[in-house]
Length: 525
Ligand code: DGJ
Image (cartoon, rainbow, N blue to C red; front, side, top):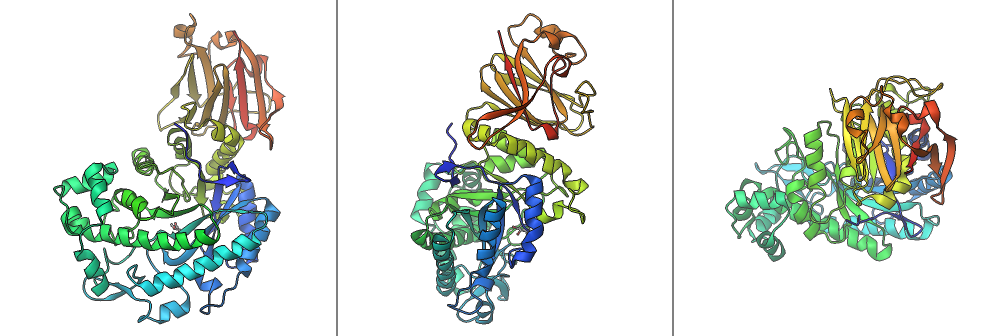
């Protein structure tokens, strides 16, 4: 199935492979220095960096864009593309980046009222004055970019950050009460009748497939769903206003509901685009090009569930935040790309991947190496995602090999390959991971670490005997390689060979290590 590409550079599809800075790194040029170094070590092509409402409009109506200018200059100097993160009404379910004049005027910019009648430090999505002020500032930012981003470094904008309410499931003030008592919008009602996303449909069915108020339709999650609709509408207006002046791709990101983190307003911001609310967000916010999950999950099943949930209702998967190595599982990256056709991927806290001397920190090594493998394969991803010809190689604990169906061939990824590589490489014990890509019937690319790929024609009489102990046996020698090449793609997408392998270096399968980039294999008759 054709992949819905959202990001483009010079009118061509682009895969952002990115690093997100820490939250406070976008205020000035000096703070960004470490980020540029880390992005280069990561071989990223995109920086994700915040723009703060409190900074660009510290005084109402007086816009200052020096910090944005610094980001653009740095990006051009370091040849990175940019995804700007609009930290404004919402940042992680709170209002920390709203300007002081917004925080100070509680009459004009109304806050969420919690269930006990207490005011909490979150701006209410029902307040028209807040929407108007945020919309104006965002509009000014987009106006600045359309004029000053001459190199077109900025490829997309994230509108707000993990929006929602922390501290309540909804606004219990008068405006919120009125909304809560209303019937759910017709558009949503008809989506439910005609088949919504599995998560939303399940929630509605659990509550007896009822139409009516938010509570009627969604039971105890009625307040959360009402808030999701209201926040999504708010953000849609902000995005629509920005697109009027400069039509860039825009998206919202989500703090996930998963594992034990299930209570809206407590464990995650209520009204955010969690899986049950994705469908509702997509209907309420048509000016957003996608909704993106921040995935820090390590456990495979939960990771898969997240990818599955955010590829519903035509939403392409983009992962704007993932672990820089301190938690999670960097091997999952390959699954997102190969099995869920992720159209972009980034780590959070890129600066922390370097140690004080500027080297890659031990915890981040696996992530960095995995990014290198993806970077080498980017032209192939753009060409072949959605075709079923890209395969993730991922070694789970205790797993020693993985069989891959490659049309006329079987591919066996053997983990912990032992020796028999070449004079420069010794097998390092690491979790096997990477990609195997079948470009043509007899043409393959492999990249990653900790595995060797043994290819075998399905119709070969040698297959049965050879497969399980191929690396030790002589059978791999019998494969008729036309070429085994280490190399890279150049700017025009042409394959450039750095080194050929033959004889002893290819007789025991196609081994991959992080430093060789991609290995191309062509097999003859
Ligand atoms: C998710 C948020 O979106 C980021 O801004 C940052 O706060 C990270 N969590 C911290 O892990």
